[in-house]
Length: 107
Image 1 (cartoon, rainbow, N blue to C red):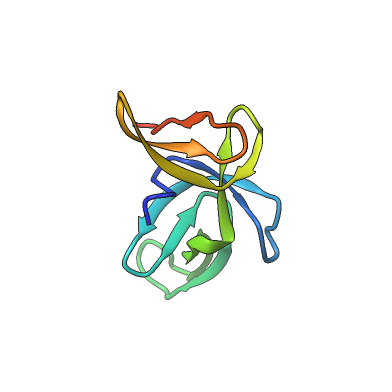
Image 2 (cartoon, rainbow, N blue to C red):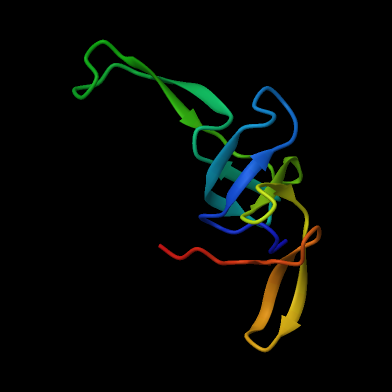
């Protein structure tokens, strides 16, 4: 399940957020789920505390299935499936439509 990695730009395919793009914040490979920035927001209710004397309701991203997202290819500018190839620079992810290498973004 290495087709989606942290900091990849992905496009959501299904659900209320279909068609939206976001950056992958976390990947849970064992569960097959991802957390994407600004996508699949849920309301978390907070109990009264010293920090929130009246309590609070916060919006935050929740994990959802990795099968519902596609990696965005820079050349195609759309969500695409990726395949793995072994090239001179090592094992890389390649766009299935145009053959462009999908770079790994490190931050």
